[in-house]
Length: 326
Image (tube, rainbow, N blue to C red; front, side, top):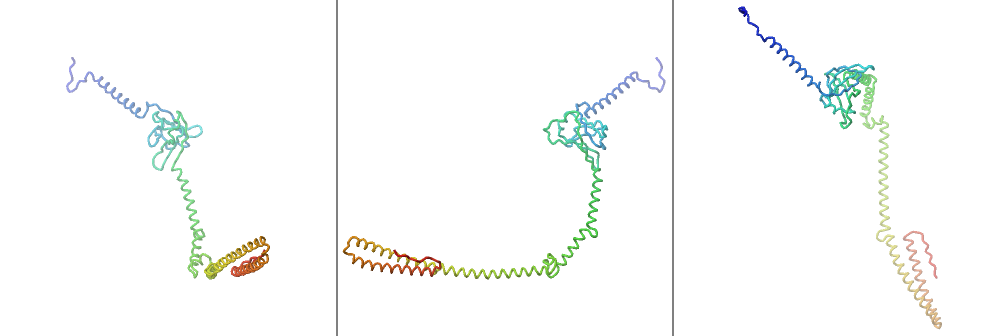
């Protein structure tokens, strides 16, 4: 047995084994960590490929997420330049998240003033057919920084137009001058009317026309009052008590009474004629009675004629008053 030098600790016989075990454990931990990371990143999950075509892929990087409603549903795996000069963005979408992407989905590439670019998906109809594997879609680009030059040019044009309007001889200055003239006219004797019509002479003409119209209205009012008085008198004369209508009604009543007498007289004539035909011996007496009766009938007819003449005088309408005797 060899003697041990003083102050030197002898090496354990299983030192190599222990070092090998430590290295193996370290390697195992590293491998497990890599596997876990790959698993956590979906490296072992079934995916489908989606290719987005963009005019400019500035701001897009490998590993960027494709989001839907704020949640990542895909990851950018590769960025390439196509033969036509456009950028091809290849995205891996897990099968479990592919249900949010449809054939009618819209993809946008947005880049604001602050922060990086974002790729977003919008699905308006989730009942549409699912997005197929290896689909190629055009991406809509919205870059705020690209809109700044256009916005600046628009603002410059607006400022130039404002300067032209507010400058000497511009529309605003002309309108202010016209407003000043209008205000001075309104401050004159005729007030607002003179300012609106343009001169005091025109305002005086309008006022004179208004005065003439008022005078005409007053004259028409007086004529209307006179017409009302005439109509009232005519109404009283025609329809009032003792008027033409009242007298006509009375005359009509008298005429009816006289006609009744004439009717009775004619009945007597008929009776006498019947007696004359029945008894020829009484012809002389019947003729005498007939003459008296005829005179009575003529008197009644004269009364009727006079009554009709009186009605015509009270109610002046043209009538044929001729009465023919039988």
